[in-house]
Image 1 (cartoon, one colour):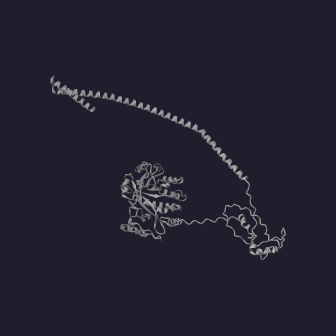
Image 2: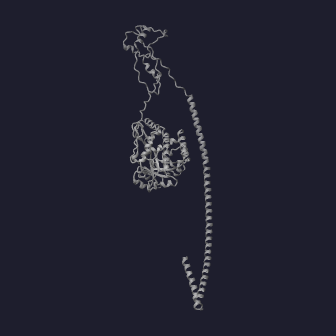
Image 3: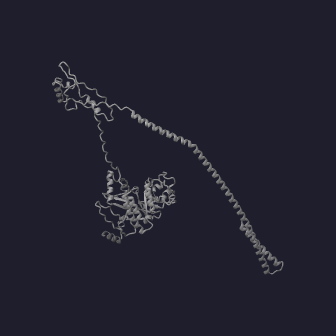
Length: 564
């Protein structure tokens, strides 16, 4: 609108100047030059007048706008002041409510403390009374020991002087000696022994009784008459009191447990631990590498170091097979030390070819708390601090959640030397990225199936598609592992995943022998599929390497290394 008005004013000024020149030329008889000069002069004057008046009008408008802005600012300041006053009033009311609540609950707390003291005093009094009652209680009556059984003695010794002489006549019947009453049986916690069979007096005992008391026992008495007194009767009840309770038989030794399934089926755990210890002590540990590629370019950015143990039968053991038994046998610190030494060699070789490469190395929590191994481990990593940005230590999610003060201190010592960490074997996505970043974790490895969540189970508070963005905002990268199909790669690209690992890209492959020996002939350190050597024989001899598909220069270099 302002532009149209300016164009209209300019046209009017030009029309007025032309009209003045025309009137002077036609009416007053001036020449054409003079009339043009007068017209131009009028045009210039009108243009200057219009510019001055427009500027004055704009200045007035700007002044009004500045005044309005000042009034708006003052109004905003008044509103902020009023808001501050209201916030202060709310804080005062809140503090007053808190003080009132504390004042109301303080007597209750005092009463509860007093009740607790009374309860404690009552418990102490009851304990004292119980002790006194136990002291004052009468001791249980101990039954007198029973007389020794006659049946158990091989011979009977009769005293020379009897307190009462025995007189016998043929008319008197045979009276057995008095039998003392059997004491009441004592209840014992041990099981009741089986009944003792009736014991008859042996023939030597009868002969001795006949010699000591002539005429008391006839030598021709029948066997039933001799057994009538049943002298051995009290001996049945006597062992109940005097005989010691036989100790219970020892429990049978449990049968050795055997492994039900898996690589070590039908073997004892102790035998498996001994087998793994033998492999570690004889340095039968192989280093395998699996690449971690960028998505979607599929360029190798990192490698993951995987350990394989060669046991007596020559078959390699994967980490899934031997890790539980190595942890139980305390062998993980030695395995981590050997693996880290080899990983440093591989990293130095990789960095000589490509500066943008790294290596993921697994680390056990038992190594972090081992008082003998971890100081040596730390000293070795301190000596190789220059390659710290290229080494990433992997810890499982379950182990990370169970870290104690000593483990956290050990991780902090490694983080201070520039080493980074990764979370592996993730079972759910309930992870706090800020806490991970503060503790030096820079990677989180999640299985593709878990990340895509085909089953629909809620594994996190956010959608899995936003998980990568949440981690990246705190400097943590997401790595999708166990990728086996192209369809999974396409779906993961929608989740903004930048790194992938799995058999789709490459399985774990052994490190070239020349890398560990310091001899190299190629830019990579991983054997191709046609270059993987077979497992060594039981005698421990190194196998020959398949040279198919290798350049003649590489064959010459390998031959020179073998001769050396």
